Image (cartoon, rainbow, N blue to C red; front, top):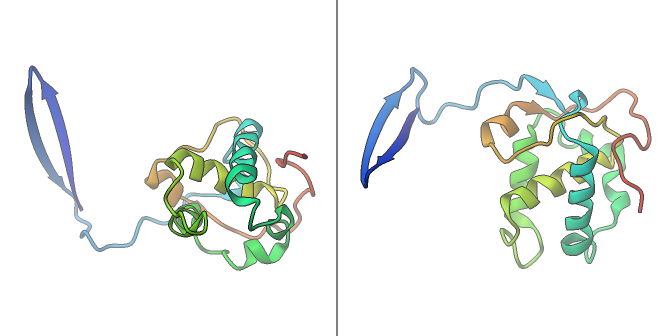
Length: 150
């Protein structure tokens, strides 16, 4: 994989190229965490809920994300995969119209509807981080841990 790093100083930009042993078409590294590891905060769930009610509620109900089939259908994918699904298809007729952070926040809200545990750090928009978190189906999830009632 080739990465470009730009250094700016006094109007001068220098591009440095670095390469790794992996090829550009290689799949991302395996996920190191799961959605059961408290990957978002309760405050972030509230932000995502606001985005959901402002941009998604016209077409979606909150209950469609509460069914175990939501996680079962995505088990083995990463949070990045879910984020991209939402980013590329929603809102209907206006995909890509939210900020990247709003897409992450609404993704967090959708995950929270399955009763996943909250953590002490917000989930950011870094693709490598999102790709490192695996979606799994919890054996038993508390019905409302991590979700914000309305």
